[in-house]
Amino acid sequence: MLTVSSCPYMGAEDRNHALIREELTRVLSSSGFARNERLSRFLRFLIERHLDHRDEEIKESLIGIEVFGRRPDYDPKLDSIVRTEAARLRARLLEYYADAGSRNTVTIEVPKGAYRPVIRNRRQTKPPHRRWLSVALAGCAAAAITIGWLRVRANPMPVRMAVLPLENLSPDRDSQYFADGLTDELISSLSAISGLEVRSRTSSFAVQEKPRNIHLIAKELDVDYILEGSVTRATEHVRIDVRLIRVRDDVAVWLATFDRPLADVIAVQDDISRGIVNNLRLHLGRRQRQYEISVDAYDLYLRGRALSQQNHPLLFQSIPYFQKAITADPSFAPAYAALASMYAFRSVQFALDHPDDELPRMRAAAETAIRLDPLLAEAHDALGMIHAHDSRWQQAEEDFRHSIELDPSRSATHFDFGTWLLWVLGRNEEAIQQLRLAQNADPLSPLVRIFLGFTLISAERYEEAAVACSGSPAGTAGRNLCLARARFGQGHAGDAIRLMTDSSSSELNNPETRGFLGYFYARAGRREEAAALANASHYANEQALIYAGLEDKERTLEALERMRVLSAQRVGIHLNYPEVASVLRGDPRLPLLRERVGLPR
Image (tube, rainbow, N blue to C red; front, side):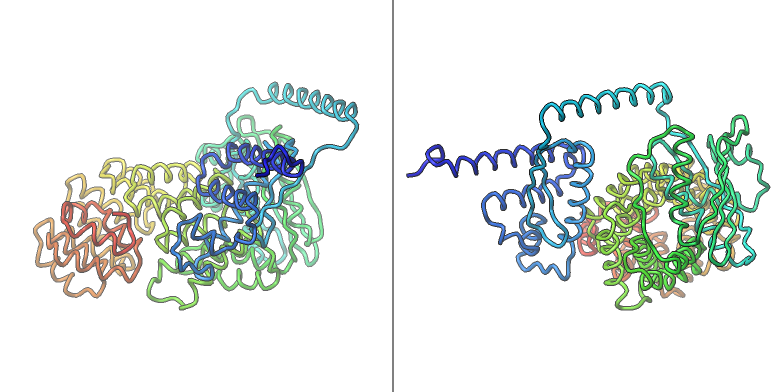
């Protein structure tokens, strides 16, 4: 028998294999992989097959079965998990070799469009003395930079900033969407910079109609710096004037004017980011990708972004603009991510009334966004919503957490993680934590406050819920319902009913709102009024609440069963309502219902 030591070729191969395994160990021990068992398992599988000379077996169907536990009849055309996770794997490897692994002599790559790993040796070929000289000089430079950094940034706390809506000075007053869209894009760009804590869009735009008293705005938003300015758009040019104000002494620490061709508008955003970074002595770190996009496509995208921030149902008018932006430039990842998010919202708002092919298009849009830009936080957020919609809870959680890793200050991801997954699964304390983080980044958002109140109610923390609910402006959709449920939990049924009956007619047109009113009637002894509401209703979510108030377990469960056609999320949220949970607690049929709708038992 031939031994390894007796064959020089095999000995060389073994040495190469040992180097590759050492590199695999380094990669899997890094921060990007150590806490992600799924990606670690994926990379380990690819490398082991490669080292065993079994590259021909590395196919999408086998990966789905062996790595991700799919059934033997797994069809990659129906389940995109392998493609999605491969995009994440490539992104994590790029991050690792750009940072911790930048000096490694062996690198592992997974090329786009394939799963067979490629191993490269990037050992330096310069003469030794030159290499050591370069290392020594780099070390001195790094030491000097570090000392300067420590002197300048003795306080590691992030700089808190708000971007106020850019004033539209364009001759065409219909260009307001352009100014608002640029403001929104600036908020996104600055949020990705290490050392900046940027307030989210809702809070920044909440002060748009108020007199611009910088000190009052800064106090309300709890920020140290404010960026304000104006935008003037002409036919072929755009002029953007900005100034960065330090709030404590009202000093403009940086002023700049950018007068550029309209095609350079994205580059201007990058210039503004650099100006802020240089003046605040921050470091750029890992920023958003700089896109090259046509003026027409970007204009369509900004129109869509402006509409997507409107209240329901106007926000869904953004969908055609995102579709047109993609048609104009099929390589623009943010348009795909925004489209996927809108599809996801519409699938929940109109669970029984949306185009049959919309769900596949929703998934395709999110996957395309990640393929085009694996580091785009909103794309991973959109995929998290989609996986939650499909009851793929573990995948959804990984999507949301990865989005937060990419952009920790993005309020929308914390909100979606809390409401689309954690609240649905009854993980109330974790949901509250995520909504608190969303509120920190977007302190004036009425939507975040209302859903924080709902989640606190699910945790039966009624006093805190009442504070959160009442913090929203009067007339905010859901405010009266939130307050009524909190007051009922505090033992004030009369106040709860009064708040509900004082609600606007449009709110009482919502079946779930009527359901809670029927629940309050039933628990307050007005059973005939509750039964009348139930009998007049054609909606399962409304009836489930009223029958729970009447303590009719049979019809409550039957209504919840009928809700399955809406979504597992709707059923999960209802089961997490204390109003329903208290009636069904301990019923042996409850675990079976959860299993049938795709919820963990």
